[in-house]
Length: 349
Ligand code: UDP
Image (cartoon, rainbow, N blue to C red):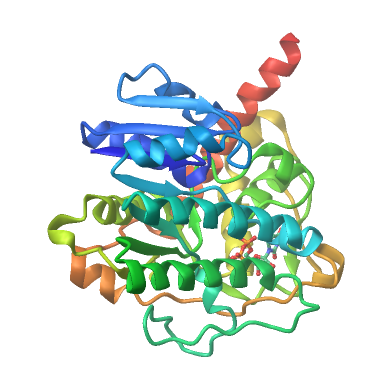
């Protein structure tokens, strides 16, 4: 099988390439702006990487959509701070650029696996979000945060429509707070615009306070990326065509924690971490900050977000296994190693 991954150097793309190369003999064609997260695979004869921007390298993409069997358009902005500060960039990249690729999949009759998001459920009141019955509830227009949720939702609906009208073979996958090594880049953490676990890791690494937005009682279900990849690989393998025309939440409802719990657990792990003790980094405090100060006034939060993973369980036997403490420890350790390596590069320059 030949698979095309656009945004292969991102969090999901880089972990997926690792699994595909380790577990299959498929050919992977990948494009991204950079390659640092996939550097270790560049010499693998089954991995064909090209540096490029999906809004510019249109011919390369069309040629490879035609050539491959499955397309994963993973390029997207997925960090809440940017939804508030630059909503049009989110729309242009996450919706417009991806729509073009979806239309090529329709034209060349290729299977597409589209990364939807748990954000599409928004402020849905259901205790567990179900792919086919839960309502998708977002806020008013001045709350710019919802641009991401609604851009993804519209593309979900367009893909569904192409399946209905033209027989497009598709699967929509909804990640629920996947976390692990390579989640966000150093620059976004520096600017305070990383996702939660990376942001807290950066704060701990620098002895800065961990900020609980609006008190930190909001809850998320965190899913370790290894468990997430078990799910995504099952979808990609698509045995018996069981993933065709379907929507799947992929997450770990067992790791349901408040932001405050996460802060406390990360401080606890960091307290005795050899790297902190060796450097004598002061232990961060946990403070509260309003969402208006942290994100700006177009932010509105999701207070609880729990996936139903019944469809993944029944269809593929999916069972996430990695508990929150192990997942946090893995993330922190990776973050430390990555930053130690980066400091060394800066020193020698
Ligand atoms: N958050 C926080 N402090 C931070 C970063 C995030 O309290 O330094 C909160 C944020 O307001 C949200 C939750 O943590 O309620 C998860 O944020 P994340 O960026 O991981 O993405 P989301 O799950 O909202 O898509």
